[in-house]
Image (cartoon, rainbow, N blue to C red; front, top):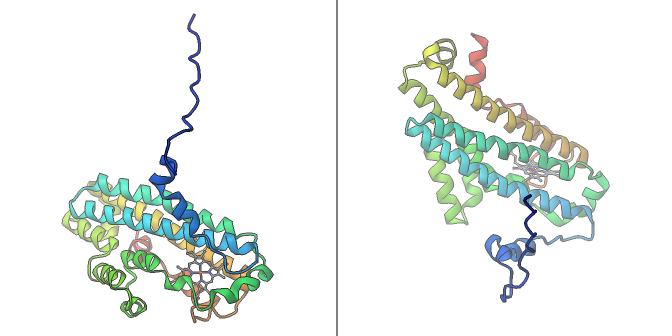
Length: 254
Ligand code: HEM
């Protein structure tokens, strides 16, 4: 009869000042970045939520850029794989709002003065995603006039085709003159699936915006934003905007 193998304990002595785990993932640096400015305990989740979402925005940018490269190479399976990885990132982004779900207006008000004029509106990682989606507002580049690297990267994305442009170009290259044609002609079945996948992306973008809106409404009502906007009403307009409107509009004629 086979006997169970003896369980070997993990190694605990590396003879180094830090563990290989901490060295690999930059753990000491990571934790050193959590620096609340107030004594309000809820500020900690606010900072962690912001940092987690920033990292996820950047990961999403990576996946969407991969998808664009694949679309440019007429590689639909490659594009699909990257967009599907992106959907996972987007789902985590949407759930990340749970970190702030319990924050009361009194808690938010007690650390808000410490933010000064800081606002997510100044997130260049988020702006990058907006440009990739095709929402290009050149005027916002001014925010980054003082950071040549960020400014140059954003300018490049602003001038380049968006994720949507690349999908639309592939559509035309494969002989479909509209999304409606892709959906109705069985020869374009794969393009219809791409359209559906892009709407999965679109819905998750909207879901993130809506949860942001709810978090703002709960934490501060309709007071003006720290970034200088009117707050809720400005965010509501952005949340109401369709992502990839051409694919939604195809629904009107199908
Ligand atoms: C309860 C907490 C939060 C409140 C009250 C809040 C409030 C606001 C407000 C009022 C704006 C409009 C711009 C302004 O005038 O400031 C804004 C924009 C924005 N916030 Fe937040 N925010 C919160 C949490 C977050 C978090 C955790 C993130 C993640 C990074 C974030 C990312 C953004 C982004 C990316 C924008 C720009 C949106 C766009 O351009 O459409 N916010 N926020």
